[in-house]
Image 1 (tube, helix red, strand yellow):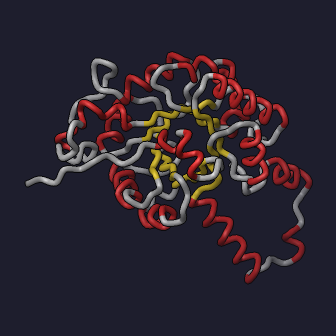
Image 2 (image 1 turned 90 degrees about the vertical axis):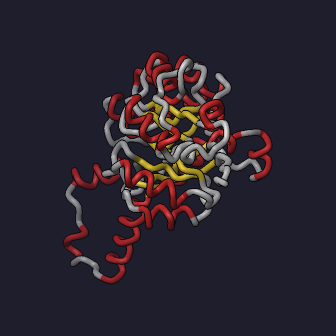
Length: 289
């Protein structure tokens, strides 16, 4: 007899009133997986964070490496969220077939973009996702009872607001039926505002908080990327439901730099930055993204 498999919790389940109460009201917290390495994913999955964000937009990931990371994260109690490279219904279909239940779509600028993302994750008649669950990990090769009927109920769709245009349209994007939440990206947002690399600029911070307010008014989940703890806590105070607070590669980079600073210090004269470099460092500390 084949084993019957039940689906894992979906990311949106972390934001129910019961779940919020169970964790004492704190925000949901997670981090990027950008190395593409399944061992790094497994290590991070055991750390106790709420979710891990597998980043197929900026990291060197193949479908095989995404699936490997999904497998090592499964069953740890930490949920996996996959950011796809673009609003591409073919790639989204493939990621869903790998078994991803939580998808983040970047560069969503309008309500029409958000509607296209909703169509991409759902089977007809609601959407355009191709049917192949008998051949794929998503439905555990037909071992998940009722998968085709119920798949949409177990998926979470977040879309990314990360441009000045998207800020203007944030309320309409959040209102789209089928969009569960918004992820704000201050890095690209700052670039579209003419402030590239200045995620902490008052105008960028104000825009992020404006989006938080709009999304909360729409009754949807909202979160933000903020590696600097003070920035993350400020956004939580503004109403953010979740914060993305780090990345595997950033932890490795900062940790290895700290070891080098301790054991392999550079000559004193090499610590002196020229004025322009000092300004750049002040605008974009290494702990930010």
